[in-house]
Length: 536
Image 1 (tube, rainbow, N blue to C red):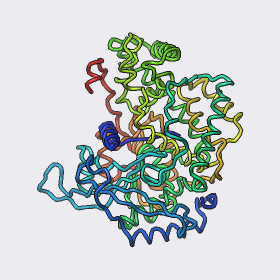
Image 2 (image 1 turned 30 degrees about the vertical axis):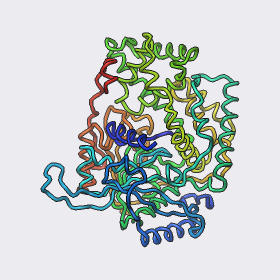
Image 3 (image 1 turned 90 degrees about the vertical axis):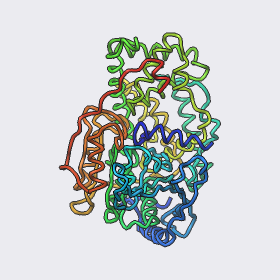
Image 4 (image 1 turned 180 degrees about the horizontal axis):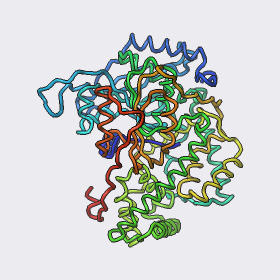
């Protein structure tokens, strides 16, 4: 379930720029999510981390980082059932609380401890999160909290996982058939099997230890290393899932938690059915985007109805299949670019303008937006490897392709936009060589967990809204804030002031609305001409 959330559009651009600047144990026991040995191992590892702390100092790429950000490492067991065995180091970043009111620099703000953040994925890297404190939307939180980011196990500098040579990531323009032929399916099955073998060959016996449960245990070790008796945590997208695992396993260790764009934690949904739901939700969001383009037909000329816009898109797909734009952008790259617009409506003007320009004979905007960034191949390969390992390890998957074929052939009849490409992303799990866990039954009873905050957009495609409703039901005392008639993935610090008001009231003052509250959706983006889009 690819669900890599970012804190906001502005935050997304900042993190992208900064990131680009520097060149298991026994299967989980159903209902508990841990063996007794793994629980004991977590206690042992947390106690050691509390004693050792984190020796923060200059970041290794300090020449590209603002001087206020520090980096360090925390050691965790690869296998929590064997805490004295092999260790790995997680890279952690920090910007200390300014303790200055951003609206009155003479006023001191009490420090409230550390706020730990995870951006999702699986495979997302939160190392640069503390730099969001430079943005106006995050300054009040940055005044009260040490902002803490980190690279989870397997990600970035934290014992990075790899499944293939990064040179194989971007092989050039790719096809993306909406209704794949039998020969194409056989080709993708072979690729999925080879990828799964590559993960096993490169990771060896360590492969089984990349799981959501271990991410939750790592989070408790990080809490102890930071010297926090109780954790204040914000997880976006996939970060909400292992955050919910943490809340279930360690409820007494929770101070405050924010679940931003929540994954459905129902064990029956992890992860195969969640991916089916995601494909259906992206179809609805793709329809929203086409409706918006149609309303601005005078700007883009792609059609004054969603159906006409779809025909324009399909015309571009057919043309790219015959002759890739710039030799780099085929139907697969086009779909990938428009899929991102399903996550964030900030991209709507750019994507619409690029499609319009391409169909009028100018491929440059489309190539700029959709062509693979080959310099990022190693990072993309690492992200894909962690994503695959965690989702495949976390839960049982169908091992007979006929099940995948049946379910997704049916789904593609009504949701063709993303369905089959989502299959190819996850198909290695059908042939996975490591043992599968049984998902933890995420659930807390009355009084077991402090009140937590869930944020969700009603038309979110990456993490459909029913996941937020399910999490709200399962975490007793939790509060759900919904952005109505909107679909941005990752709401915290974004464009909706009402949502941000609830977020700050909770994290700064511990105040929550009733069990559920609603905010009107943020304004849709304004259309942009080609010149305005390029200047953005």
